[in-house]
Image 1 (cartoon, rainbow, N blue to C red):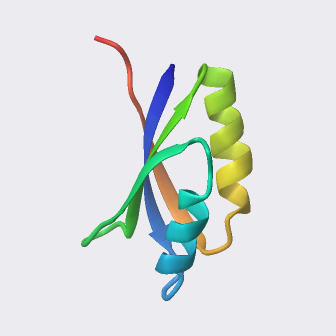
Image 2: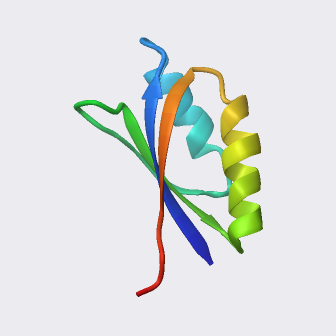
Image 3: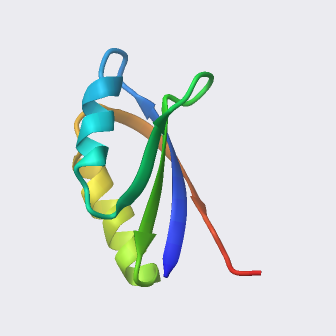
Length: 77
């Protein structure tokens, strides 16, 4: 299973809308509000790297209010 953490910056005032949109996605395992440089963090899970790419490049880019993201993909060690 592929896992990634996505740090999200939202359009000002859209934090709650983005949070709720992310919470409705089956691939989002967790979403939390942050203080500081980023507004939200989401943990997503996918069967493999291809599915992970589809989620990141397709699904996340359609959510209104997301201004910028930084993706941290985990690896097994």
